[in-house]
Length: 443
Ligand code: SAH
View 1 (cartoon, rainbow, N blue to C red):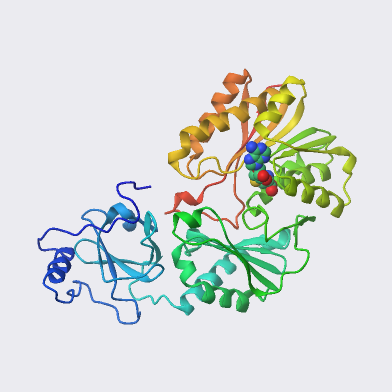
View 2 (cartoon, protein in one colour):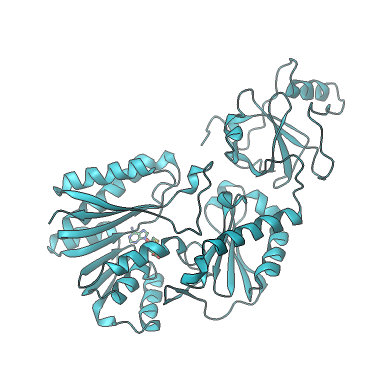
């Protein structure tokens, strides 16, 4: 992320010359209206006038279709757009690059809605994008494994900042940036029309909202929230607390990875760290695990996890639940000489951005080193990182270091990612936040 100036600092103005931004600047100084850019101005969009003018040579990432414009790339703003307004982005010579949602309060000054100059950013645009996202899920047959899925996955579905998760008849939307915040009512109307849910609930209360200068919001947007919300996944039922649970209430991204764990759990002693509402634990129990010890620091999540065991008629006597800090709990298990055949480590995001990578690396190494030590020979470690700031390569290196220090030889038997309802746009590698490795330690 660009750090060359704070989000609230006014954009610098250029110093004379012949290109577009300089003409804007000169006419402003003379008190005259800004000249029109060299390329044909569009007329279809009411917000056509404001424009973000990039510094020379700073259009490269946009030409590669990366959808973010960092504040450090901006030369000046033509006009006076408000947060969330649709604003054209132009290169230093005035050529159109993209239609974006503007946010003066963020390090990411704008996020791209469309690369087409003729596109109008209106209700029909959002309808089309959301309908496309739904069609993609149908093509991928995501809905065949249950009634929960991520319907809209932000940038990767062409809708930066917008997340929509479906739990049966309930939709949960999360507006993570100024663009979707501006179009909130329109988006809710479209979701209602296309999906006919009994409720649309808004969970715009992530910490990321503060970085965008947006207030946190949590509540019903349309309809009525049923007393119990449930998601069915590969035949397992999970209660979902959409109002106060983490993220939008459940972690749909791990669906396929949980199923894989279930197929490998038979007759094994399983340890599930950072278990939340028991996702991996329930699959392991159904898969015939001998025992499942699940650890999480959230008492609320553990309560739901135990409800979920009951909902599915699974053998509760095989399940042990611990409310604890995993870093401490793993040390205790080591000191007690406990051993497991299958361990899952699915921690929260230790590194939201690359700036946190070093500290996060130490945390990942710590838990994985302990995990390796707790495995019996031939045991399996399912280890994950959902940190945008940790690349696949770095994650693998951290795990290699952990195995070395634990004194075990281990093989990667599978690499894992988020389920297909969390697609990754090729031009937006940040979308590939979830990475996992299945490792087998030598027998
Ligand atoms: N594996 C889960 C999702 C895990 S989310 C699933 O499949 O649904 C990460 C979880 O880590 C959250 O439930 C959070 O409460 C828990 N957590 C965060 N920090 C923790 C810590 N230091 N010790 C134990 N649990 C922690």
